[in-house]
Length: 472
Image 1 (cartoon, rainbow, N blue to C red):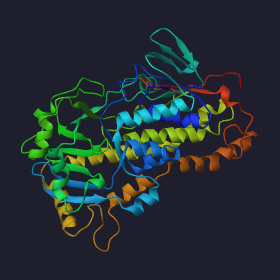
Image 2: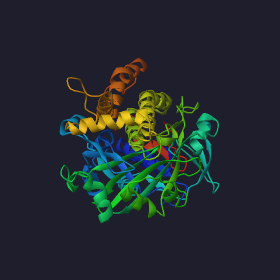
Image 3: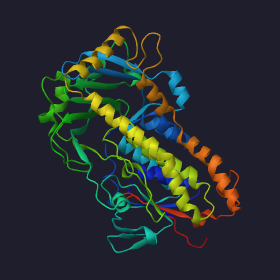
Image 4: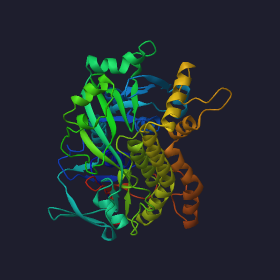
């Protein structure tokens, strides 16, 4: 059995992926499961959506998400249009995914229903207070002790699982920014905020994302719930270091939005009495995601904390789940668990750290204070917009800009292919050297290993996955 801490996106994605390949998964959630269903927006890049498509969830995603192509860039103070970026059809065909807009709660529901339908067990009000990887055990606040073969820690950057693996509490380093998340009804005010800027170029069917650059701040907005609502993320300068997901709503957005400010954005901020406030912190790179016992691994924010509301944060958690399942599909005995967990880290470590660093750089780029760097950024966008170009296109006669090429590589990355390549290059050779019976590519159940005896425990309040039968 695999035990998985926390019923957030990372934990549920792991449950879906691992049950797909035949494992028994138990997910442990500290609360009643509703606190992890935030109503804020989620942007799903192509590298994330194509995984969910591969898992058979395309039609379900169509019902909860909008497909988006254009991004509008403007000035926070005035609403001046700086430029546009359209994800062209060629790029999307290359990636085999789509750029989609949904909410955390809707995505959570789809993954939860899928995990349950595939046989995962979800335990709510299961507060994990102790983890003993050497014993493959977790202890609940009730005193109950649960065992499993593998423990997956998916409880985030402040959770117990991360603390157990690194041996200390990692508080992160504040960067002087706070993210405010707010959802409002799609009123005429916001309709004009999104569409008045360039109504001659786009229409509502394109589901545009709106980004406004300010003096040390920025705002991102996009439609959700079939255009009934708009999700906002504000990044603002702030010396406070408190604020986390699950905290009571904050009314500080109105106070912290600087002046001058586009009147339409000001209306949004002034009416945001129940925004979610999350301090932005830099957690740096974690060298090891696998516990020294080789029975516990971190995934998602617990392994590689991304800044809140970043584009790739949720995507990397889904990629983690996909890669872990691809590897564990080839597991032929419990003795191989440790080596497969380290293979997972080897496959994911560089990818996630590079993506996290890119997200941090993008955040600082979007919140540049007025000055030479900001002027260069904005003027470059203006020139390309006047020339009818996307803001990330290269200059005449040049290849795509470095930013555009980086995005193509990020969106086009196929983590499941990478895991398959690892197995072909290294896993099969190792199996042959061991004289194993799993040395050819198999589907779960083809070999002599009885998957019904293998279970994974995913703990969401400290995400953990554990496999429980010791009979093999």
